[in-house]
Length: 323
Image (cartoon, rainbow, N blue to C red; front, side):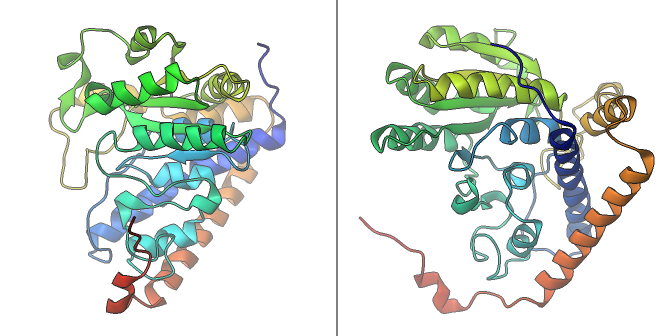
C-alpha cells in the first residue's frame, strides 16, 4: 500500500494538535501543584505523536477507547480543551459533566468513549464497539489505545482473539512507553516487541517509532484501511516514552537520568518542528503565533472553568442506566 500523501495543511494541523496536547499537560501539572484541581493525574508529555498520529488517520464516526492517561487522546480526537479543563475542575460543563475527572474524560460525540482507568479496560469495549459497527453495517473502525502493561493481562488476549476470529474493524494500539507504573517492560515480557504477539492470533503486527507523528499516521492509515475493508484487526506497537512519572506523586527515580535524557532528545514535538522548518512548511514566526494562540485558549478555558457551576447532589441520579 502506497503511503498517504500529507498536505502542508495537514502537517500544520498535526503540529498544532501535538503542541496543544503538550501545553495542556504542562498547564494542568501546575494547576495541580497549586492545589486548584481535585483528584490526581496521569500525564503523557512525550507521547503526543502517538495520540495525534493515530487520531489524524481516523474518520468522522470512528471511535477510540483510552486509558488512565487520556488527556492527549482526547485532544487528538477533537474533544475541546474547554470541556476537558472543566472536567478536570469537576464542573458540570465538563465533557463528562464533572463526574469523570482526569482518568475518565471523553465525548462519544467527538469519537471518544469516556476513558477507563482500569488497566486494559478499553480492550473488550473496543472489540464490542467494532462488533456494533459490523452489526449495524457502518463503515467505521475503532482505535483502541492501551499500554504495554495491559498486554500482560487476560482481557488483552481475549479481546484480540475475539476481534481476530470475527475479523472485527478494530486497530489495537499499544503505546509502549517502557514502564507499567514503575515496572520495566523487559522484566515482564520475554518477547522483544508486543507486536510479535499478533502472530498468535493470525493478524498483522507492526512496531513503529511512536515519537514520529508521520510514521504513526502512515501505520494507522494502513491498519485502518485493512479494518475498513473487512480484513480484521491489526496490532500496532508505538515505541514512545513518558517524560513525567506514572502519576503526579511519582518522581520516577526507577529510571536512570541518562535514559530520560536520551528519550528527551527524541522529543516528538521538537523533532517535528525541525522537520517542518526544514520543509518550509513552518516558519519561526508562525511557531510563536501558534504557541500564543494555544496559551490564550488554555487561559480562557481555565478562567471559564473556575467560574462554572459544580454538579448538584441530585445530579448523581442522572446518567445512570440499569438493564
